[in-house]
Image (cartoon, rainbow, N blue to C red; front, side, top):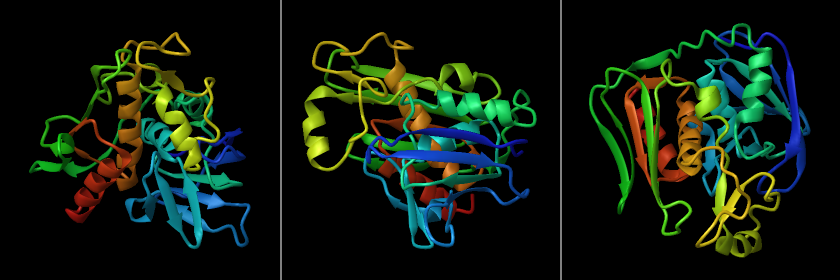
Length: 273
């Protein structure tokens, strides 16, 4: 499924702080999802594929043909969850807009531009027949055989506002548009100065990210009691979408990261999914 008309979004990148414009366009069936850096000579294409991943530090970056594009996970999650397998994504810079920190704006624009936004039936890349685990100490991400496609994410932070929380999403049963897409990115107040000194989150504000200290959220209210775990699940969907299609499996992550998500996707790709 592709979109039926062009949609355009403009905003500031989380890490770069630079404003970019994104135009999502119909493309040939079977072409897949891919980015086009229209600000560069010859408009190089960057496939939204696991083979293009070049960096996973606090976001996922793709590189190909001498060009890069960063923080792709929210848009890719929206495209994948809405069943949009083919899309040309033109961008005039190196980082996608963060918007409100969620996939909500992407979903709103895409559903207005999709041929049939209500009939979402995610095709899979076959049934997973054996479990696959990627772990680092007590952090892990896994894909286990399952009669249905399902995603589950757990997090555990030693600050009271977050603590231990989980969320699951099953395509076709649970509504991505209302239950996952609105969940915003989040951060810890004591990490902000360190991240900015490292050249990260230059575009992060209290308007596009949830921020908490040891005791409270600095910019309530939350959209869901477990909004952070829902957002991490959103990131997982976006990263695994780099496979093209999801294997039919139950994907489970706990305290994981873009790096671990991508490692799992690479392993599954090596297995033929």
